[in-house]
Every structure is written in C-alpha cells, then in structure tokens.
Length: 254
Image 1 (cartoon, helix red, strand yellow):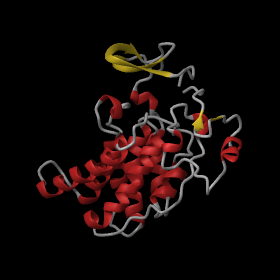
Image 2 (cartoon, rainbow, N blue to C red):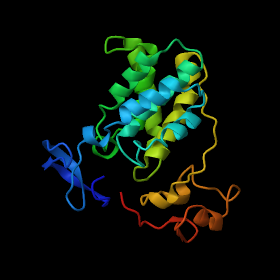
Image 3 (cartoon, rainbow, N blue to C red):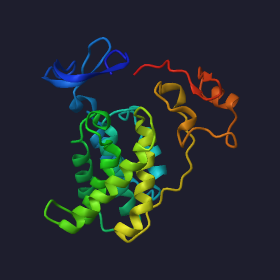
Image 4 (cartoon, one colour):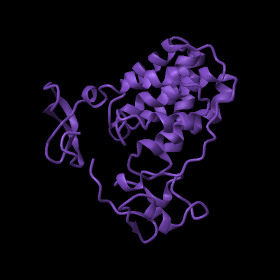
C-alpha cells in the first residue's frame, strides 16, 4: 500500500512499525522494501463502506452483490477487507431474501469479520472468507458460545467452506476464495437457515493481469475455452501475457 512493492511473508513475527499510524507491533508480513501496514490501517474506511453499500442494497444474489461491492475503491485485490465483506454479503442477501435482519446485524457481521487477522489463511490455517460463512450464519441464527446446537452448525458450515477452499493447491486469492465461500453458503443455506440463498451469477475472472499469484487454468473461475479463447483472455486486459496457454506470467506487484 505504501510503495506497491510485492509482499514478503516471514516464518516468525518481528516487531514492525506501521508506516501510517506509527504503532509498533509484531507481524510476519511486510513489503520487500520493509514497509509495514497494520490491519487497522489496511482496512481503514472499508468497514463503513461495506456497511453503507450493504444496507442500501436490495440484491439477493450473493455473487452479484459481492462483485458489485468489491469494486469500491476501499476494497483492494487482496486483504483482510474480505474477512468483513463475505459475512456482510451473506447477511445482506439473507435480509433481502426475507429474513428479519436490519443494519445492526450487518454491522455486527462486519465488526466480527474484521477481527480475523490478515494472512490467517497461511498463518493460522483458516481462510477468513470461510470463517466469514460461519460469522454470517452466527449472526443470522443468533448463536453464541453457549448455544451448543447452533455452535455445532457454525462449525460444520465453516469446515465445509474450508474444505472447498483448501482443495486447491494455490496461493491466496481473495476473490476466488470468497466466491467459493459464498457458493458453499448457498449450498448449505436451506439446511441451516431453512431458506435458499442465491449464488447463481456466473463468474469469469477479469483480474488475471493484476494477480501475480494466479492459479491459472486450475482456478474454477479461469476463462474456459467455451467462454473465451486463450488469445481473447490475453487481450481482454491490457498487458496480460499467457504462459503456454495455461495462465498469466507472474509479474505484478502489490
């Protein structure tokens, strides 16, 4: 965020000073030129933007809502912002589909989601998007640590989302993992919530040129031959090279 250099991930945490707020804390993530931005500064502005967009929306399809909301300038290609965005999308879609939910529930989902640390997928073994499914269902069901039946359901939906995301041998992609989490939430919604949440919008990835860790053709949202040719995939975003027809070259920076 400071100089657009690629991120580097350390095996152990070190004391680092945030380039924006000046606070010093332990972290395992910084850019290659040693800049560090804490999670609070990274997501600054995003939570309120997410809440504002969610409360104003009447969209029922979670995929369409997610793709619309992530276009906001406060939502980067990757980052902990998605840990708040995913539960907000699910809770909003549930409200728009008829459940008795208001802005307080949406705000609660966002506040809980933003507590998940950046890089949790690689540092803690739990993708924030998958945790977002559990977070959203917790808010909708009114669960808490003492409601054993609901607690069991929350664990089961989170496990299901983690299993789908973890089935791919891939570096993090917040868009891909969020979409998988939302699809999983839709699949489980009838059983858990007693109503079907929608996640039917088709997705063809258009951020190939700006994600240098892209999985390529192994991604479920990679442009398929019957959707778009390799040449078109290369040309749909300026400067997008294709490596042996399989995926983009790794040359972007964060």
